[in-house]
Length: 391
Image (tube, rainbow, N blue to C red):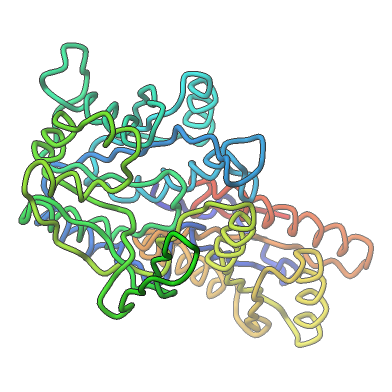
């Protein structure tokens, strides 16, 4: 959504102070290739693409009653963060989520509340491979009840890997178009060993020669669908590696694409706290407060940071000597800047804070400002992009 101009006229007297809030989307990285260049590249290179997310797990290893894909991170379900990351890739036409029948209504409510687009639901199987197969069937032309068009390439990703970036999605999709299959890999962080039957070391692998298989993975749709149609029950019930199925049944050697460290999977309860920390770091707010004096800067900045528990970096500009017209011109520059940074998945809003001399009124004004900022951090509502909010 394109940023809108400030929502009302600013007072002519120098009392009001302007705060520009520039917030990165929680699931976007500063190093992401999203933006005009990435969109143009995607438009030129990416084939017709769909994505399948198996989300039928019960979260047994996490040890919590709620399946991990529905566990809240900063008051938003984990799977919603993952969907948000995929939706940024505008060239992914359809996103198929496989969930169990008992969680179908929960997933529908998440889609509605967070306004996810291009998302369709299918019922998950009892294993990961069976859930993926259900998603592929929904995209296949040979299914009489299919309401979706068959893609040329399908991306398979985990619902509990929320930090995937558009550049790696594009890389595996284009590599799959060329090679038939592709998958993200990462260097091993620990040496893999093989124990003997008596519990002693049998042998170890050379860590430098091996890699960890990660998600996302991508395939020519006809290749992976054919592989799943040939799968044995043992493959569907006990297998985990999709790339191996393409090799085993279709003789397709996958192209391996080096992924970033952010492709890790939320598996254990402690991973929820790590994911929350990453999201907070990526939010990394940049605050620009317009103050009249250095005393204002120290006074207001300290209080805002205290109220927001030091989650913000506060920067100040001294506008005391600027005429009103120049101040408004700078506000318009914020609007133009919002248009540019939105292309990199950064949301920009403005907050107008009144700075009365009465300390009690100032405290209330700051409290309102802190409440607004905290809400922006948690909700990341795109409807507020470019608006000038008033505290």
